[in-house]
Image (tube, rainbow, N blue to C red; front, side):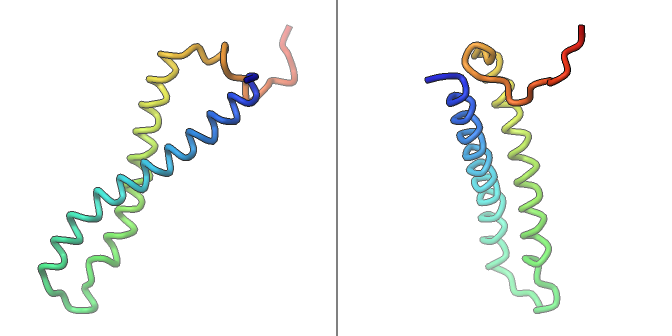
Length: 96
């Protein structure tokens, strides 16, 4: 495989990894709290799910970025990126 294909596959794999981590973190945040909420009865105007779902979604996105960043740094330390991947952004103007 050439460097461009490796870069393309890496970007696709990293994107899928980031989405899966976001889903897993959301589920890990949501399930315990939902189980706790089912045991209680709340008035309709004080439904805690109305603010908990957006909060858990935002927290899962933040956590997935942190996990993605740590795993990417680990991968960069293990693999010589210049050897296997083509640069995504190329500087058109070269400085002398």
